[in-house]
Amino acid sequence: MTAETVLELKEVTKNYGDFRLDKVSFSVPKGTVCGFIGQNGAGKTTTIRLILDSVQRDGGTITMFGQEVIPGKSDSLREDVGVVFDEMGFHEFLTPKQIDKIMKHVYKNWNSELFFIYLTRFGLPSGKKCGDYSRGMRMKLQIAVALSHDAKLLIMDEPTSGLDPIVRNEMIQIFREFVLEEDHTILLSSHITTDLEKIADEVVFIEGGRIVLSGNKDEILMKHGLLKCKKEDADKISDSFAVYREIDDFHAEILVNDRESCSKLYPNAVIEPATLEEIMIHYVNRMKTSGREGV
Amino acid sequence: MKGILIKDVYCLKRKLFYWGITVFMAGAVCLMFVISSKHGNLAKFFAEWENTEDPESAADAVFMIPFLCKWVLSIFLLLPLAAAFDLVQSVFTDDENASFYKVAASLPVSRFERVGARATLIAAALSSGIVIDMILLAFCVPATDLLTYREAMEVVMAFAGVALLCQSVALWFGYRFGAQTAMYGNLLTLAGLAVLTVLGNLKLLKRTFTAPDELKSGYLYDLFDKAVSFLENKGHFVLLIAVPVFAVCYFAACSAAVRKRGVA
View 1 (tube, rainbow over the protein chains, first blue to last red):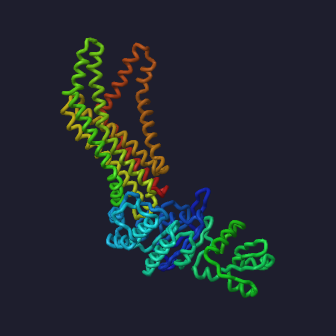
View 2 (cartoon, rainbow over the protein chains, first blue to last red):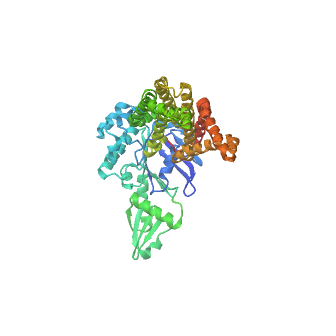
């Protein structure tokens, strides 16, 4: 692990019987936003639970802030971690004022003043019960809690799912501000790839409990492309380039993993840039049809 | 742990009003009952029954009426304690409904502290229930001849012991098998206590149920008398047994929480 890595997973395994997280390995560099992409049930939440040590892992190692997360013995590491879930876990009858009093005794670095500044900024009435908040407000409350104890790492599990585009955009703006400080890092799990395209520096793509693709987002977007051709030309594209071929009655759409080399090799082919969503869909389809692991 | 306990206090706060009403009503009913039994309509009713010309009814009155009144009073006295344990259960249910386990798992709070907060809450409910019962008894006992302070406290301690046993097993069950199974922990404890009671009195039960009809009622009375005598004189033994069981269940719950994570 380099000194600049905040979080590193090495061959982390968890077996639930009907679902297996299989030797998951990836790292999150310091000061970056790492998008953790995958469809529902791919293993994102399980991975996050393993990072937080809220479920027992069957194998592998997890390192956070340069220290190994030892099962059941690394609770203090969470002092520097802010967590946002897809659903608010606070009791609906609690008010933010009461949450402040609770958190004051939970986090050593809890900053009440900052918490109330965030509440005002997010338009959250501090005396109102959480249960009366809208979904967007609940998510903002979680973010306010996560940002008020000087967290160095934000771990978010589908924070933008179910939110309208305006609120999603607001939240992305908040995340951007958070990572402006160079020692702040975000691991953002989502299946809404458009959000990640806006903010992520790194991307880790998980499918069926396995990491199929990981790396710098811009590099991934630059390397991948959608080659469009006639159905009969599809087989001419080398397997070493083709991630997945989607063929209908007349046309073929092939996701290629090296756009530049491919365009040199097939100068007449039209290769368009692929979005993260298209890349994700093609990798999932490839796994479904062949069961092969990605690059 | 302090933060988790403060959260529990906020959960309790919502229901303290109802608990206060329960305590107040139980106290008021107890006082009315003891005053009436000494100076009011109940006293008149007892006197009429004792002075009846039917000797069998008079004998019943002498033994049974004070006995029944004493137990009715005891049940009212136990209400605050029962309500205190119900409050604790409601905190656990609130946590479950809010999926607070997710938040708890993300906090820098160890599993020992999280289980410790629950155990503290159970101990606090037990203590507050016993203290309130002691206060109620301090008002009621001088006003009646139905029961002595010691007898009543023995009954209170026996009940507190049973409640603590149930809560202890439920605490362990909640962490070992999931929050939804805590109720089965309660039921299993009550069933276990019933089995132990039967096994401990097997000879007496056998004698009673195999006895000829003319002796049966006498034996039944003996059995009943033994149970009452135990509760009135040795009730504190139940609590003494419950305390180490509570400690064992706390450590078992901690161990289960470490092995099976993701529980609040």
